[in-house]
Amino acid sequence: MTRNVHLVWFRRDLRVHDHAALAAAVASGAPVLPLYIFERDFWALPEHSRRQFDFLMDSLTELDDALTERGARLIVRRGDALDVLADLHRRHGIEAIHMHEDSGLPWARARDRTVRRWAVQAGISLREQARPGIIRGLDAQADWASQWAEAMSTPRIRAPETIRAATQAAGPWPIAEDFCLGPEDCSDRQKGGRAAGVELLRSFVAGRGRRYQQETDQPALADVSGSRLSPHLAFGTVSVREAWQAAVRARTAYVQDGDQTFAASLAAFLERLEGRARAIQAFEDRPLPQTGSGEDLRPEGAPDDPRLAAWIEGRTGFPLIDAGMRALRQTGWLNDRMRAMLIGFAAYQLWMDWRLPAEKLAALCTDFDPGIHYPQVIAQAGLKGRCAPAIRNPVRLSQQLDPDGAFIRRWVPELAALPDTHIHAPWDAPKADLAAAGVIFGQTYPMRMVDHVAAAREARERIARVRQPGRVAPSPALRQPVPRETRQADLPFRKTRPKGIRRTGKAPVQLSFDLGLSGAAPETRPV
Image (cartoon, rainbow, N blue to C red; front, side, top):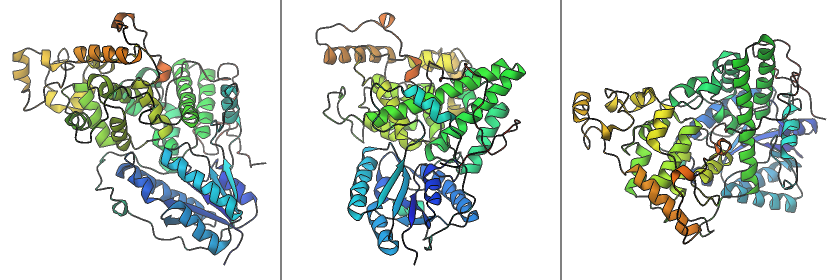
């Protein structure tokens, strides 16, 4: 039996490349035990779902293959993390546990605190590596942007060529039914695993992302011109540093070639990567608000609320809202503007408490990451103390984001025959057009749940009464729009460019895999 092993606990870092925890364990010279734990309480959380489990299994399969090529196997265990770690310690005498920090849900944070206390009592060195650009215990006066830029420019860590593995049976792998996750419900789910993530990154910087800046907000186009890396970044099959360095390198090449359109799109992508990290940093610093914290503007939601069911099933009677939800249910992905619109509609027009819609939406997202999802929800639900939060008009947004109705026609085919002028607000269509299109409200398509203009007005008045009693809510014309940097789902937008993007044409140390551009620099080993 192997003793004094260094255990690597994989969580949201399912790769062997640019993996500080794995590299540190291998560098110790001790036998290494790569571990993944399936925790029943984790999969019982309402934010987690079958589509996420299936993506995870794709990714773990490739991780196991990568470890096997290097002389190790992924050890899979089911159960409470503390029980699993304690059992492995009794069997092997664990000397150190290596893992990356995780800005997770309250349950995950509590689990990690428990593991830290146990490790101290057991005399085990717990070596937590920071996620690149995310700083635990960040000083309020610290220059986060500079630290982010430095973390992204640091050469990525080379995958180990060989791993001295501890001897241990790999263990049986679970299936979704073990956690009561139900049948497959996402027919067009993205494939997990590093190979798929690397190919998405490659195709994005090599050509697919050329019109990213112009098309990423449009739901009918974003699934092609967008990076689609969000689930791979959430599960860590590709590191954010790999994505950042690949984009910087490609942008430099396109600037030299005079392709300003592609260069601008990659600059916008880099801004979103930084915005994504800012959202995670904010979530690291400020946990979710609790019930009774003073941010409860709406009555507590009920799971059997018919408004919630209509919203989550795409039966609100608002075409773009319904199209977005149906697309998300079938594919597990939606661009950030659409996610923001869905949450805003639930919070204001339907006046639902933010928690249940947030949980339901999270479970539909293959790329769910609490550090991205919940800052978006908090911003869109108006939990940041604004007297007059921006309440978006779903019809106007529909006209802006899907002007020709292509996205609506794809996902709400019962409205496909309506002309462009009425497909965004079918309740205003002439009876002759409705008849010609075969639309019968209440039969082929639901009537809209609310008068969105009146509902928005009432929401503003309610918020004004709660936050500043006696003050009249300002009219929509006087309100300031929510800045674009609050958009935080998927790959969020940030107004200011990352430091160093415009000041230099030099690319940082690059990826080891070939992205179709010349001059790949080698990875570096950890010091």
